[in-house]
Amino acid sequence: MPGRSQHTIARLTALTATMALAVGLAACADVTPAAFSTPSGPNSAPAPTAPAAAVELLGTIEVRSVDLAFEPATLTVEASGRYRVKLVNDGALPHDITFDDGTRIVANPGDTAEGEVIIPEGGLGFICAIAGHKEAGMVGKVVISGDAAPVAAETAAQGHDDHGGPLNTAIEPDPNAPAPVRYDPVAPPVAAGTVHDIELVTEEKLMTVAPGIQQKVWTFGGTVPGPVIRVKIGDTVRIHLKNPAGSEVPHSVDFHSSMVAWNDEMTSIMPGEEKVYEWKAEYAGVWMYHCGTAPALHHIANGMYGMVIVEPEGGLPPVDREFALVQSEWYLGPQGEVSSLEKANAAAPAPDLVLFNGVANQYKDAPIEVGTGERVRVFVLNAGPSIDSAFHVVGTIFDTVIKEGVTLSPATPGHWGSQAVDLAPAQGAIVEMEFAEDGLYPIVTHAFNFVGRGALGLFQAGDGDPKN
Image (tube, rainbow, N blue to C red; front, side):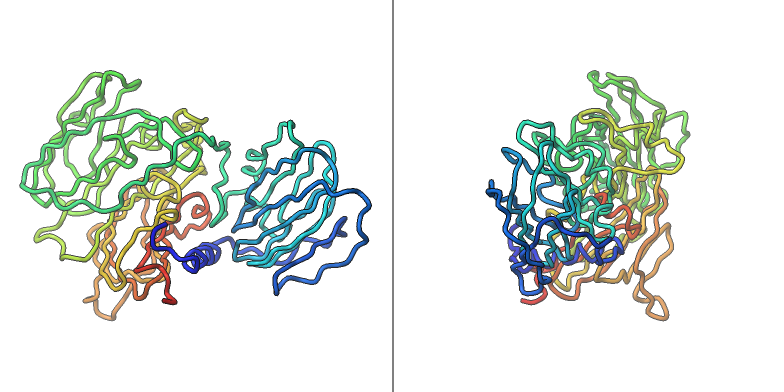
């Protein structure tokens, strides 16, 4: 990533680790190792000695631990036998690798430890035995070449609350899937004029929603979320909705910022049809629009939603930077197919992914860059369809919040501030903040069971390194 020093990357690892589950750092239980570890770092625990085995070493297996995952989770060797194991801990937490035969190798953050293990016919599984780490996804296996080995599904079943390692989902990632396309988070300027003719074309397409995971999504304008529409109080918006002949299902659109009859502009159109949806911006706010075709839950869960910004009378005061972030959920279907309505329809929602602007962790992998000390405004929408958001940016305070027309500002008596903004599905808000020093500032929903499912991004202030 341009402009990122090794120190900055280390800071990123530490920051994401601090938001992990509150797991204990002690080992789950004492085990009698079948082999021994040889830590190489200055803080590693002393290793017991053991007599050298008479069996010839066949090679070295190297695995890296991050917070909270093994990389790789599946290791392949040519034959059964004795191997040296090298555990490299690149994370900010202590980790071990504990094999099914009891062999345990421990490495503190930044350290490397070595040991030996016998890999039998059929391979050998391993976990991190530190409390909570297995449940967070630290599961793997050594397999013999030619065996049906990948453990992605097994690893996926262990948990979803990693905060720095690969996402764990019930869908095995496809290494040949295209890389995710980063959604530009920059908010558009207010549209010029007072009457706006906007063409909104539905598109059904394949989209990579997380590394290696493709879904056949339904979109407005070819993106998830759809395009941000930004107008002023009193403007007229004329939407030309088109459903191409190649679509498989009917679609519609419902603007929460409008006051029109549900059985008029919001009715569905079949593939090959189009219609005009006209409304006047009577009220300011951050609003949702979405497809309302039955079942509306499925159309929203499969990508058909977007944000409307209606500025108040007199407009908003100028700031240095403006961004638009839409929180939403994916209920994954099989690779390359539409999302699962059955999952989305569950009485207790359990999304596979929760994310900002359609792609898991995209602003963690490519942070949103801002200037230190700049005034930053974020338009936030929770598109749901089913879970609440607790929008929070670590390391700063919202000094301005406008939610459903209620305003907190620096002029508020008592000098109040806000740490998080609670948004039910379909609610929006405007928040403003500043970043006091160069550094990385995580963007999360403070419902932390969802942060490890993709709801994690970063603002990078300056060069991202507070020590410069």
